[in-house]
Image (cartoon, rainbow, N blue to C red; front, side, top):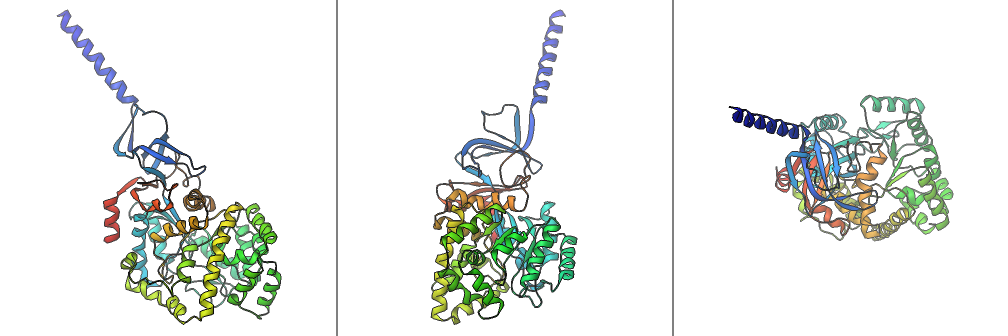
Length: 469
């Protein structure tokens, strides 16, 4: 009897010990095990484990295997390369109500290409975009996180449908009130009709409200005045080039007096590019923490439409007939352009590649953005972000800096670093796992093994299904 009691006691003790051990275990939803984790801040690559729960990175472990942690789902990431999901920092959802569904299909193309966040730089589908944005945040729809400007601000008779047209300071305040009411994530200014005065006053008004602004710059304004007014990002390189010319003031005055137009100014600004002026401009951009969006891929694509046949593009099949129809405007302009205009465009494209590299060498923060969407011919949502990073590297920019220009700088620009940009505890589990090292070859960003959006896993097979459905 005494012997039976002893066995019972030992059994009870064993169960208690097992129970205590189980209590020590920490359970997570997903474990990315043994992958090469890329640190976008310094380019270091360290083997480690990433634990994910409730759509967030719970912890990142670089030590030996954590015996006290386990997960319901374990992904063997041995030999793979892990980094934050890509950001496309310049896209467009637009084209009117008839293209709402066509634009909605872009969301899957972004995810299939590892793009977990997009910055929508203005359009006329704000109501739909805000619905998608909310549904994605609630995990009710597959798509990237959307940061949107909503409608652009421009002058009377602005080029793009849905723009908020301003003629005076009262209009500016009303426009900003409406954007905050939506609410949008930043303010986008366009340059087709807005006056220099209203442009600069809009930037100043945005600054007073503590909002973020980006945009084109009317050539009737100077880059220096734009930076001093408080712009946070400059879209495209035309305006940077203007600020690097020794003749910017002269050209600006001619534009103000309607003696020359936008495209007339291009060869003048190129030929008067001055290294010392450029150096001062780069320093000014850097000091004021102004980001620049080069959009090199679209520049190259549009410059060589006379030579390249896009009819067999793989991604053309994913574009609806309505989207393809919007391509005709740029295509026809390219067909009808004079030989001189075609050549000038190609020279400008080459110039911009050098300018992008020089900006990078002078430590001006760049944002990788494709400018994909309706009306921008053959700039396909998803794949074009990879081509933009490749275009950056082709200029001489390092693969690390091209990658930084996507998620890392994107999060900094939109002041979202507490949630995005790096792989750290507490951040949103938007992650891409690659088969090969993108630091060795930037084209490896296309070799996607898995995408995680808010912690939800998308394998190669499910990514393929997303774009074919």
